[in-house]
Image (tube, rainbow, N blue to C red):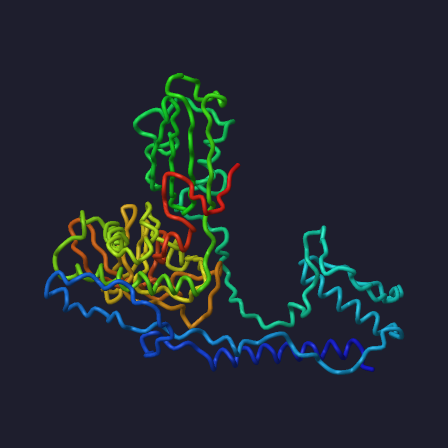
Length: 487
């Protein structure tokens, strides 16, 4: 029978072998760039056609073909699974030697030290270890862990291949200025508290022409829908709001127009609210489908202005993205995308921040593995270098904000696989090729070097169907077929 020391040595060798096998697999299965493939694994209904050319000059801008196929799916068949057993030798648990017991418990000490990240005092070699007892089989598959920590995994974490990239920068704690901070976790929940019967109302705002709730006066970080209905003197006022953090709130006030009641008299002025919190990040498949539905049309819409000298709408940078999203209103068979709300333009894919060219942090969101053509980038007070610009030159984007439409895919450096919440520096995306405009500068194509991102903040969004992502579209009344929340 092998000793525990021998088993431990074999396990360590198996862990090393697993790591080498994983690295070899990654080396043999790197992704092929999308522009180098001609395989289209998707065979769904074509998205709306791109907008018509605005002039002959607009057709000479080297616009990428709308038939460019998407990249093949990542082959996960070769990913390493759990380690194989280190040997077929059986252990005589009833007759363990003192040396084996000491090795066994030292191994457990190391495991729980790694699991709970606490130090464990070494055993006194002069004290004999207690006998090992086999645990009784559970009478039910369900169990309750009061400590809040689940049972240890079947394979020790130290023996698994490390597939998560490490970084000296922690992306979980760097603050960003958008979306605006909230008190209760989302803008919708903050407004729901305003409608709670315990909240004090200083005026009967619901009985005025402007039925926007007072906390939102002067606030542009939302979209609003309102309506009212009455029967004789009984009146109901409905308000629905979609916020820049993509949370939703619906409020209703029920009162009588014959009685000038105190707005805080909850018997005569009845109020309530329902809300939906900020939506969670999506996996790869729905994000790729969103790109297939909206991405090419949005990119082509922006490119159709390049070289014409013609502005999009007012000529503001924000208009280029907002009008591209509105373009889908004419296609009744296409789900309405999330509209531009303040500096938000859909599902957040990436956010980053720079405080010096070598002091950048970033965070990936969602399950896609790249920025795609038709995504929308938002800059705030950014200092960045231009690809092909003079050495040492840079551009200032945002006064304080600037919006642009991305017209070329960008992948993570080194073909790295990323997951939701992973730390990704802006420079890992290489560069962004965009179409942008500003007052005084007609739409034009630019390429920004994210390795020369020195100051400011940035966000990248994936245009996506509002109902697909959030479960409903904006309306004054709460949807009956969606499980909303209340306080």
